[in-house]
Length: 317
Ligand code: NAD
Ligand code: AKB
Image (tube, rainbow, N blue to C red; front, side):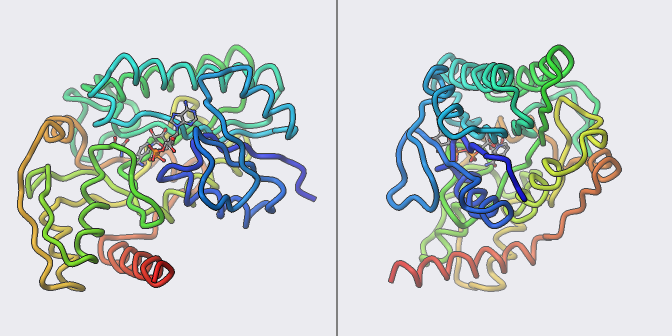
């Protein structure tokens, strides 16, 4: 019988919205508690209103529900963080340390803390960026993720907390809108295509970035969290790869389904963020240590996105 109780923090976001039902299916509805700054319109599970910068409120929720695992998804992402760097740093760091301290005092079994390809900067190899390389991020978001990776190693070594982490590429999903990243253009493009609108892309046509379809991202998350502890050799964060493409390649893939879709290009400040990130990621350590293998290429992802978005549109009608 499954006895763990999982708290998801930042559950209303792009990844949390898709992760909650997957965790419920895997472990049972009574074993998953969502939480975020605001209650969702129609919560699909037990849900708590929580500002994770408040350590006492976080501890009370863990106590109330006998929490044994946390998935900590609350963060300010790359583009949004640049609008107010000190606020983004404070939020990302305070919530992280509150989660690690609650994990210590409640002796939690496992904690999941995602990192990002944003940890890489200009000094890292661009193609097949290796697991171990220079980390010189250009955004406050990337700086906070590098710090989070180091804090994860520290809490694991000093207090023995079983913290697991993935450096997610840009996540492509249909379940909700993304929350202020540089890779958001790809999701936006699908939404404009399906509503038959032109899209103005803020990156140039040839900007190649590492991305991952949501089903692959969630599968990797479950795989790393369910792997035996001795298989987790990297306690900072694992490189994770899905697929890589440019806006130009995505337009072509969309045009296979919707030939009339058009896009114009008007690069803004997000271009320099994208230019500082890798084109593709070497995730051989994740493959070797806990058997990671992605399923979705550009064609499969595009078909899945249109099928998911169409089902949402039918639900709304
Ligand atoms: P998101 O911005 O869509 O969602 C974040 C959620 O956190 C929001 O619902 C927000 O309301 C909530 N939140 C913000 N401040 C909070 C606080 N103080 N207390 C509680 N909740 C708060 O982000 P996401 O895309 O779902 O990303 C989840 C995690 O994955 C983040 O750590 C992010 O850095 C990481 N990640 C995401 C991507 C991606 O492409 N989506 C890529 C790499 C890493
Ligand atoms: C962003 O663009 O900020 C995120 C990420 C890659 O971490 N999607």
